[in-house]
Image (tube, rainbow over all chains, first blue to last red; front, side, top):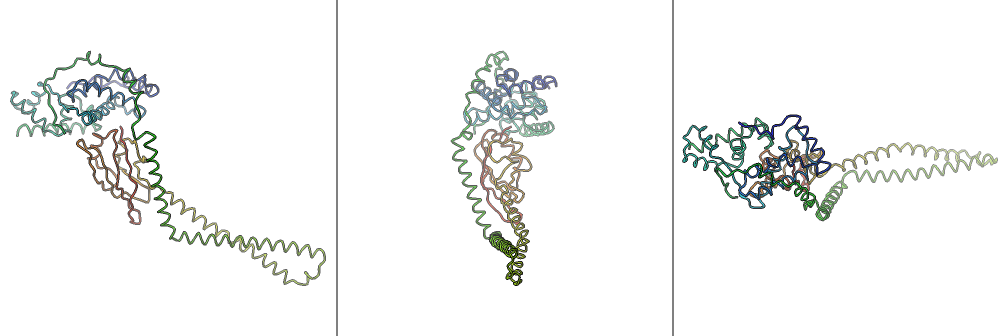
Length: 188
Length: 256
């Protein structure tokens, strides 16, 4: 599984990031390097769950505004700054679904769907693809979120854990259970 | 809530395009122009603060009215009586001292009458002795005062519900969802309370039995209520004596 190079960083990179954060806490204009580093990552996370591109850019801006406004509350816990940004992004996303009547969307690639069908040991036919899409829509919100993070966005369990504020092991267990539920729906 | 839309093979956006849409200057200016939320503005805290103070004063007045029927009132009366007695005895002893001084000066001047009447002197002495005896009562008064101070201190115990000393407003979600949960003070244990939050579909109110918020509610709070208010109402506590009491409602705005 691919590793997100922006997320998984060396200690030196994390230290550099911490220096930017400390400077930005004193002067918001110093937030620039953090914005530049994480803008694409956060935008892709939001756009993955939204249909409207412009709204996704708008929500991304809101995430960074909120992050800058609340930066004084940020505490370094040895994990990348992006895990904090993801949590804000998640909260802003739900707010957009609620206040701006945005449509919750799941974006999948056919390739990922066929990979999943193979894992269920079924034929990778178009009919099965359509069936899997239908089954995905039947999953509850939490399970669908795990499927997205793990199987469509190809994130590591550690990253999933940090985004969802759970342990790496818990992320692994929950992802497995979600996949099992999907399998049950699919083979039914 | 609308059903989730599933899109297959949407055209991906290039990194260059996303980068071209970066605008840090706009974000910075937006952040600077951001107004504080309604619950942080002065006009909100004016009436709310006033209401809280009024409730607190009413609550403490009711408490003190209840406790006035107790032996403290009797002790107060006793203390007042002793104070009055003390003042009187001091006055008497002053008089006695004055009288002795006058008598001595009279003796020095060679008045035999005063010498031939020892009973007068002894009376004066006895009244003089009465002074120190009454003064010896002073520790008793001190003791009573100390008792009163202790009673006053016990009244000062916190009566407002809190999560790890956060009484209302912004709170880290970890503290809101900690195992310690909602607290009052050492004398009162929380029995139950209602928590109102947004569950993704609408506002939901649930009754929490005990102090800590169940993990299932915490997950919903982490998911949907970051930056929006969670209300804690109908707080019922139980004292060590088994008496139940209702406590003032509060609200929190969880953050990361």
